[in-house]
Image 1: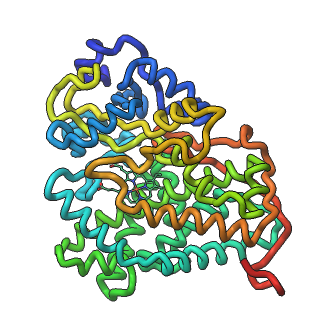
Image 2: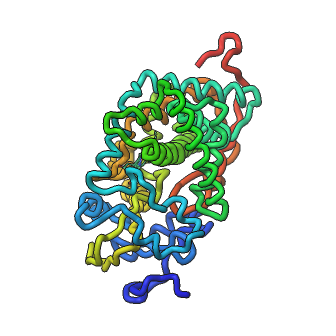
Image 3: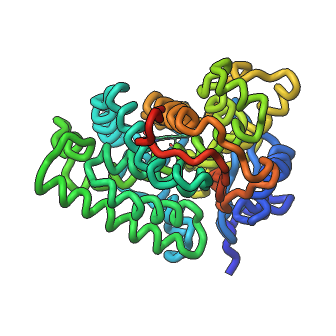
Length: 412
Ligand code: HEM
């Protein structure tokens, strides 16, 4: 059976750009260049036989993201055209949460999350970040070597979220592993999604039984009175929406800092703030590379492309970031270009300030404890996890002088 919608031949003059190929992770820029050559909106595959429009132009993206009348985030009409066992559904299947809701329903769900996160004060969040970094440092610090993706950025976000949502540190490994599998969108995506679902259900069960000073309890008790099932779906979304991109933001920033000796040495002398490295990633190598999926409510012409309904339209933050880097090449400073990494419009990331605080505090705390972090590999030899949606390192191996948080005279 032809997996493409009937309209495909009408505008599909070139082969779709295969964002699911391993080559995409190895060299995203050439894939983005091919997409960009098709105009503001290109034509790609998110998985074999799963076509999508990809917006690579900033103006087109902003027009789309601010036009709720023409575009919806509800994927159900598209889902009806996709095989039940397609691995891509882990990231795209409709669920009753803020990400897949339009209009008033969206505002209701989103409000509860915004209010719950507003209760987390910066000094409190900073302390939670320090706690997580110190827990991890006590594990790998004495070894004198570590993988800053697998032993630092990912488990740290899992520790922080367990803590914020009210589960003990011991549960954080499960969250980390399940989300990683789901995000890659490969053969084990369904397994990861199922395990992640169990994790969230257990969390809600524990908080239904006994409330605590955590985000889950705040969501259960919010005046907008979401049902426990609705809270479950918001938590399911938020843990995933936060864990993956923020750990990738941290490891991508660390790889830039460590891969550039001038940067790193000025960093330790205090001349250049960690925030610069974080902003550099958001501007030029954003961790949520392709997402914010919309659907035209009816067939329409848009920025030179005839859009069919029920075909995903993906915003390529990665392509936009890449072309921003080219534009500013040679002259750029981290403050030269604005970025779209948190998206725009109704669904713009509601947790930007918390994210920036987590990322900068985590890197600062780590580099204060371990000021002589030394990358084992040059940056160009690092490898990236496959998947159409993220920009995510497989590992970031480093060496350093062994250290423990409780050694005499040693404190961050
Ligand atoms: C503490 C960490 C984070 C949390 C809890 C979080 C949570 C969320 C939530 C709940 C949404 C859905 C909003 C809605 O539909 O109204 C969202 C959207 C979004 N977030 Fe975040 N986020 C975090 C970090 C990040 C990071 C690091 C990035 C990328 C740099 C990012 C990029 C985005 C984007 C692009 C959207 C729009 C996606 C879409 O509508 O499909 N977020 N985030």
